[in-house]
Length: 414
Image (cartoon, rainbow, N blue to C red; front, side):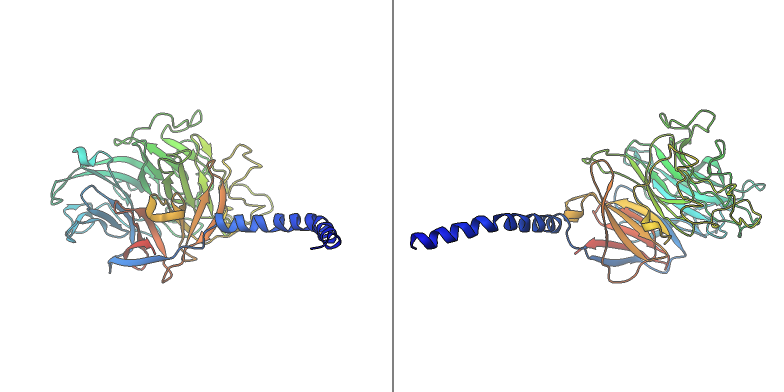
C-alpha cells in the first residue's frame, strides 16, 4: 500500500472510531442482558396421586413419607412404598377421628408441617384446620399430633393455637373466607402460620386478634423470641396488616439474608403481593373507612377501590409499612403458595422464588438480588395449565404441588 492510500485509510479509521465506540456501547448491554437472563425454563410434570378431594398442602417427613391434607376430610400420609394411610380427619376411616374438623367456603383442613426434630424422635405433625370445638365464634386452629414409627397410630392431640379468626356469614359474602392457613417451620426451628383477614375491616390492624397476620410460635404454640410485636400486640405476632397470605417460604442457606421469610398474598381486585417479612412489620392492609368509596354498608372497603384509593400496602396511613418485593403489575390473579428453588438441579434458576397463581394458572420465577430486590420475573413453560394450591421442594430436589383438580404432582426442570 502506497503512502497516500495508507494516509487515507488511517484518517477514515480515526473518523469512524467514535461511531464504532457508540455502536459497541449500544450492543454491549444487550449482550450482557442475554447472558444474564436465561430463557424461560420448561418443567416436566408427573402425577403422583389422583382423585383427591381438594388437596390443600404437602409436607415431607424423613424417610420419604409425604403428608397431604384434603380440605373437607383431613390429613393423610403416602408412605415411601406408595401406601396411603388416613391419619386425622372427620370420618371414621381416619386413625384419629377429629369430629370438630369442618370445611365451609374457602376454609377447612389447610396447612401441614413436620417437626424439624422428627428424625430425632420428636415425631410430631402439625395441621391447620377450621374447628367447631368452640361454637361462638368458631375458630381456625393448629393441632399437633404424634405419629408412631410405622404411621399406624396417631396420638396426643394438642391444640397449640386455638384462637385464629374464622369468618362467619355476614354482610359481605358467605362464611369461611380468607383464613390464610399455611404452616411452615423456618430454619430458625419455629413454626410460622399465615392467617387471613376474614373480610373483617378491623382485623388486619387489630393488635389482639390473630387474623390478617403471620404468627411465629414454638412447638407448644408459645410466642417465639424476637418477634418484635409492637407494644400492646399479641406476642405471637411476627407481622400484621395482611389480607390473605397463603404462601410462605424462606431464603435458602448460602444466599444473602438466608432464612428471611417471604410471603405470597392475594390482592383484592388488584395488586397481588410478594413481601419480604421484617419482625414487627406492618404489611399495610387496612380496608376500613375509605371516604368516597361504596363499601356496601359492611365497613369492609377491600373490593371497592383501586391501587390508589384502596391500596394493598397503604403508605399514606402507614409510612413505615414493609415495601412489597413485587406487586404483579397491579393485577389480581390469585397469588398463592411460594417456594424457593434450592440446588444445582435448577441450574441458572437456583435461588429463584417460585410463585403460583391459581386464577391465572401459571407459575412465575422471581430472581432476587442479594438485598432481596426483584431483578426479573420469568414464567415457567409447563405441558398444561395447573391451578396450584401448594408448593414445596422435596428431599429429592423436585418441586411438589397440590392441585385444585385433585392431584399431587412432581415437577422437574428439563
